[in-house]
Image 1 (cartoon, rainbow, N blue to C red):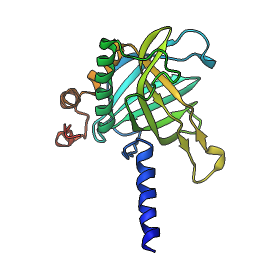
Image 2 (cartoon, rainbow, N blue to C red):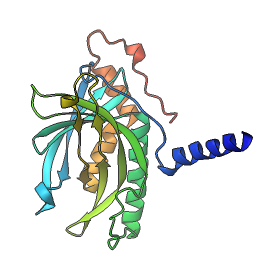
Image 3 (cartoon, rainbow, N blue to C red):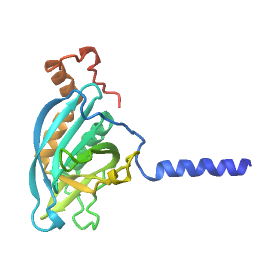
Image 4 (cartoon, one colour):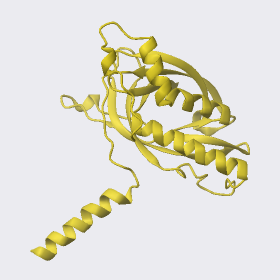
Length: 225
């Protein structure tokens, strides 16, 4: 019995560490009070990945109560709301620093078949997606991989939104699965997003733009990741 218990502990530990994703699950009410903090541009693959990348504007919104940032964009007629919590934003900023170091040192690997799309780790995010205003609004947690990818010989900083599964408790017909989507940033675009992710910026912006009914005492952005 003790031997079985020992192996169960080993199995649980292996399962938790093999994915390389620190458990950091969270949910967001998309209707919660929020503040638009900016817009940035990013690049997306075209349909079937043929041709040059598409350049697209992304709306960036902050939810002070939940301390999450939302990136809203459209892909193949679906609107995605990709949420980043405090831990995820810290990982993004750290990943961008590593990317810039390798970029400046010219050590990014253009010959890699995988293009190193998760070279800088993986974090957990939350996704809300919907095709039309009257269709099912799906929501689920998902993994986001951080790395880089060469497109037309340029090494874009890249975040890859992995598959998310929404299971409706009332109707199977409402179940939805999102696809894998990679978002590509130039160095300037990634730096602009990192600036919006900065905890001090978010704290100052929230105080200056307090929403009605939102207690300022609750707007506390900590640096202890």
